[in-house]
Length: 427
Image (tube, rainbow, N blue to C red; front, side):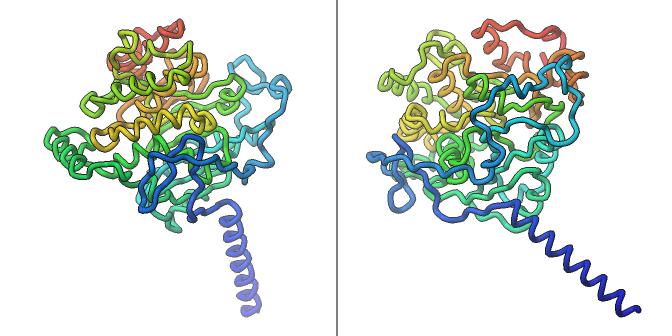
């Protein structure tokens, strides 16, 4: 009898192991082959890891969605699938189970290292618990080194949608051929001596350039139309009662944010000069009803340093793949400021959105409470925070602080500030 019982236990253990392996394989995808990156107006990679600034190539057609093919609905009547946007709407308190209704062709996207596994695990739990456990959107992870099995195992176990893992090609994480290495090295040394944050970091510059011009070109990202960027160690303080991807799609929004602030000028002294050169060379890309008033206090002569904090952003990938945006990135990239200074992806994305999108295509997600060290967006108003089941400290809200640019966003869009804006949050 004892032998028979042991045999049954072995059978159960083997079956459990097979099921675990099947779950992991079926819920993750690993892409480590060279990625398709050629889009209209995009510099064609040259041999040796650089980019050939003189050439461009025809667009590669994105593959049909690999994992959202069942969920994504393009043609539907929103009235047939109403979202609960306020506590008075049906379904507001229905936060259990999988939500009915359409899904957008969208994904979360994270740039991470293997050593970030436990910090990104915290972020995933925040996003899943507050939103994605009811919607099951995919998650794309990108790295300039191959992801190890532990990273894949941990993240796949936490994400309710499918996970995908991509290896960044060398030409997207290296110095382009036109960069003067001696000049770039001297800049890093000078910034180190000036104690400018990440001033001497090469990898930080590669990251900023990648997020500015390449993340949306990765083969895995070509499968999607919308993205939500998530970084390690972030928090979502409130329940998200609706689908932000649908809000973006149904309201023709191309870019969104939760926190805005002034950039560190010493990292971008010539960025606006490059922007003005682009505007002169490409007036066809500048939107008539743009957000210049958010970016400049003198009609575009100088940059006031305002930008949307890009560690949180929900956006339209087709806009980033457009000729307008790729022309903008290529122009800045050739000027070398990612390496001769320390241009960040936040001002690059923000300036592009501010100049090339109509104002009404940029959205402020007031009710998505968000933290990334050291700043907090906590929705203004006790009633709203209670309705959203928030656990953020309103005294830490950065929205209306002197170093925030959110007031300027409200002003140029003629928006009324929420009740309590002048009594809550940081000074």
